[in-house]
Length: 139
Ligand SMILES: CC(C)(COP(=O)(O)OP(=O)(O)OC[C@H]1O[C@@H](n2cnc3c(N)ncnc32)[C@H](O)[C@@H]1OP(=O)(O)O)[C@@H](O)C(=O)NCCC(=O)NCCS
Image (cartoon, rainbow, N blue to C red; front, side):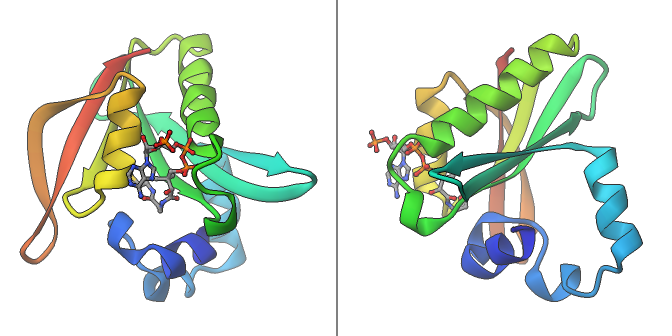
């Protein structure tokens, strides 16, 4: 799923398909231990995924690797994923949730705004000449 996401929406992520396709099994296994990985299923088909883990500051969580398979978009799957990772953060004692969204990804930013995230004012280059913005909300 992660490789499909990187291939389908390269504009949305800091990492690349070319980088991650080289990962060995041990790396993939470590990645499902290091961070929590959720999937949403629709009629038995995997429709989307999101990850959660420690953020950069104490008490903060970070939401990453959010992707909905194109056939299932605009049906509320993304909203379920965000709400699920917020619920996970709440249950694990985090007080804030952070994420990064690329400047070209207005659709995703719109979803995050609708669900209570606001830009923190922090930005960074995700690729040469291309910015991403940090957003956060209380959990
Ligand atoms: C962003 C993404 C996860 C949204 O998933 P989704 O299942 O379509 O989201 P939902 O159906 O729950 O919510 C849709 C809402 O998000 C916003 N939205 C989503 N895509 C949008 C788009 N292309 N243009 C404008 N608004 C958009 C709207 O507010 C929309 O609500 P509406 O359909 O009532 O207008 C999905 O488009 C995706 O996987 N994109 C590629 C990867 C990506 O951008 N990941 C996020 C990295 S930060």
